[in-house]
Image 1 (cartoon, one colour):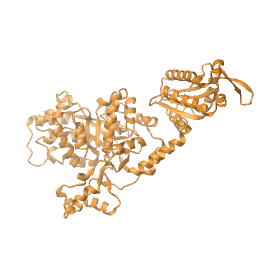
Image 2 (cartoon, helix red, strand yellow):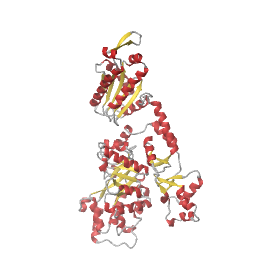
Image 3 (tube, helix red, strand yellow):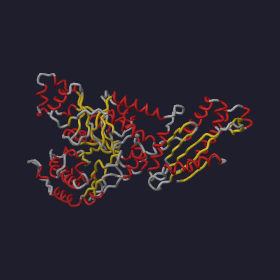
Image 4 (cartoon, helix red, strand yellow):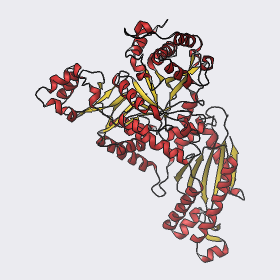
Length: 600
């Protein structure tokens, strides 16, 4: 139903017959698949990228060649508008299309095409009843020859209030230059940097640095080409906001084939990376709500906002969908505020002075981010007023510098209350939270290890509390050295009891590491006894009833519970854990190797 000539301004040249044939063929054979772009925090669909299909039926080998041919025929914009019409029509049939984003790849040469004109996209969106805020135009930085055009595209389309994204970031020539001079709303990190990120520390560092830089500038980060759970886990750990790739969902031609949320991301979010509820609650308590200005607000509204709120020196600015774009500072307006005709000049739309001209970047963080990552974003920014907080990519509130300090202080106090003052390891509250997480996630294998120092009381009675504390610190230090990594949790239950949790299916490897830990402790702790006791191999003391008894030198017993993947949800129960643990502890103390293992 779309006809380019219906919306093109008068004076455009008619295309050649060859060009008309090209357009008609494109209408008949080209189709578009969509691939979901998903919120990494909760698995909900944020948007879809449109991906061309059946380009081979146009007699070319690659999608790029289709656009090259259109450019040769001098109908690049006409062809692109036909393509956009097809994409927007099909997008309108997707689930929640009015509340999700359409990511559309833009050829950098389009604004230099002889048939180019402005306003066509807006007309198409109105035709299908879609707001302009749903459209995000992706500008690629792969081709050095088109960098000047890419810069013009970013500047022009940001000026028209569409969202913009730099596609394939890290694969091209001048992504950082684009990022600095024409701040986009999103950057999409190229899949070449994502694939292998869970195995290559240099890749992880590079993507982490890019992500931190983007967040400082108030830009959201999309990780492209995520194909494994390991890649997804690292992307979440380093702070990416959105993910796209085969692990979540392959591109689909059928608009009805998509879910509104994806369990693979939801499950990972439950297992990794979420700050605990106490930390999130502390952040919520410190949020300051500053009423935001909209990017399309008249400048008179902006001046009135500052006049009515004399204690505010800046306001957050959001787009039509509520996503933050940055802040506007009062001092940036002073040039016009205090000049004789400044207000009249800035209020006149013909001058082109809109709120976007006065926009300044501001760090952005999701409410589910950890305090540490929020602090990092704030510390890297240049003269920041604070951090804008978002929920589901919509403006939630503001965390000022003083509020951030209060959050850090409250978190430190909460952690200090739970941590052992001696070993500085997490205590019972954190241990219970970890056990609750692994038990509730039946899709992941885990190993839970409860350890108890044997004959500790006799040693403590004979040598005093100071030496007893040294023995406990020795074991905690050995435990830290033996078990390291992102999938490991270490805890101090209290006294001479310790806990290790490992998210892994390699239970035999974990058991070997426990055996090595027990042997190392038994060897090292001998030096805490005097020479006579070491030589005789026992310590004379009294049992709990006051009777004389010989106690062997200190060692450690370990009760090991392995939880296999694929078990029933919430299995085992806490009651089952308690009963099994009590049995295993007794078995471990009586066993020659001081180990007892049970699979649940």
